[in-house]
Amino acid sequence: MIDLNIIDTHLHYSDEHAPHWKELTWMAGRFEEVTEAVRTAGVRTLVFASPFSSIESSLVPAEQIMKSNDTMLARVSREPDCYCWCVLQPLYREVWRQEEQMIRERRCVGLKLGSSLHGYRILSAVGREILAFLDEHAVPGLFHSYSEWDNPMDFATLARERPRAKFIVAHAGHSWPFMQHIEAVEAARDTGLHIGIDQPQYATFWGLLEHTVERIGSGRMVYGSDTPCHLPGVLIDRVRRSKLPDEDKRMILGGTAKALLGEKLRCP
Image (tube, rainbow, N blue to C red; front, side, top):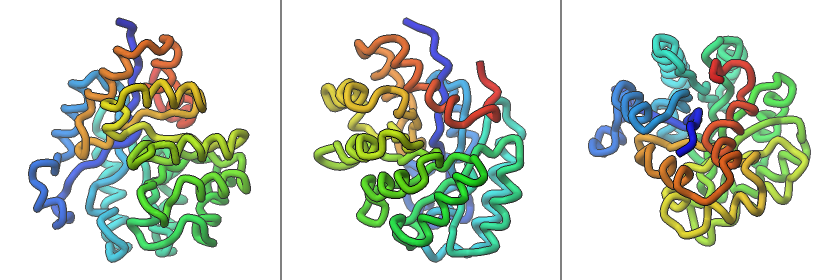
């Protein structure tokens, strides 16, 4: 079996400020538990998206988001081969100011955004301001995409307006018929739109992984486990055991992420 430099671009963890996730104790992994689980699954480079407390709802105050960002950056800075995104709630101007500082940090790779979680539509003036920021600062973004508020085709529209902006639209394949994210990439071919392969369907549905590679190519597909929402090793094993060419396996599980996240990732 080929050696793979696996990069997990989409990790979460629970903290003391996430009351909703305290109820779901069976999936509320602490930072240390998530780190151990993904490394056991063979991941070499870890990129944390957020603690659950900063993305729970539109009611999360700016102070909590900023504190969670600072805490997450401090935690990843103490771990080898560990990085983070910085959560942006764009409705708070003070969080914008924090983002401008954090993207200069060695261990911060870009911005984490969730419009349907934070109470705004991505196809809006707010969404366009975010894409402009990614474009003008040359930093990537990781977007939640799970509802009509953050529909994949809306990201395609924004990508065509800002083709140099590089970003990942997460949760590809989350709902039937599983093609929305693929079609978004096809509608924005010459842009920086990528899709996050993090849903169980990619590990369990016959041919979905191969079909996606055939339609858009492995260079637009980025692995992220979404741990602790999902187990990290299942999709890794599916990619490893597939009949895809070795180069496609390398791109999905790390190569595309390395190209997208740039020089900040100290990985071979």
